[in-house]
Length: 380
Image 1 (cartoon, rainbow, N blue to C red):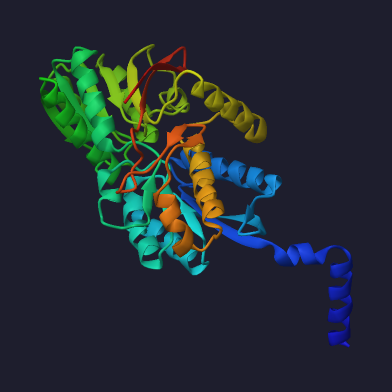
Image 2 (image 1 turned 90 degrees about the vertical axis):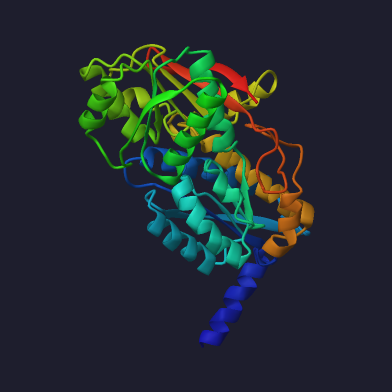
């Protein structure tokens, strides 16, 4: 009886066009980011960028190797924790994903990258900037943003040349990202003829910075650089004000979010913060980014935080390589992905060098006025 029923169901499916579904190629794309914890707003921003790209690709009816592709997004939460990150990566490997977009933090991206490499699964990070990520010798690692050498160095030079900093102090959160970008910032300061007069460290979970800020206040700093994320930077800026430290506050893309003014609880002064976001568009290309932001807001009723456009581009770059290769098999499309050059994304033109780093990566410098982020310049 069960066999007969199966035959009838199969016949009905065929009559209703079930043959088309049989021909569909299911392509699983994994996304990992911290959707819980202090920077969950950034992780959700990333995930929504991936979701938007996947929905649009399915609506377009993309074909790969003559078959209509049905894209599925498999999402994992790594909580910005390295151990949780590797566990999330293993789940995606076990699910036999065709590719991975993520992770958000360098501290989770780097350990997870070994698992993807061992499985031969291409990984594009939209936001991990620690140079080590693409310098491990893996063929599967790519990123669509400039690394900390570029970002930290540029901010270091900016602090000396443009902000005229003479008493520059540095704080980092001891994560792979925070410590890495702070190190490169210090190098940039020295290369520009400046010097740092103090360095302290905290953690990415800390909320009280009174001790380290009191130590640094004695040095009368005019620039405070923080290597870390906005969830820590916000309370730090608030406590700086309470202690009467009126220095400029400088940081990388981790603090450069639309959420930062809220995290400072209204204590952020106009033009106090200068931050750099990896990536950047100018001129005609700016319209693509503006259009993306409008579309994102309409879809999710939320403003882009930082990285969603880079996640969106990462998904599309990966799928473009599959289409060109005529296959979603990682081994077959990986060489095509590695040869990506001249891809027009909403974040600019994307091409990868021999390490998997973006070629000619741009940086955008921002400040905040009236509680809103305001662009200062795009630099390369």
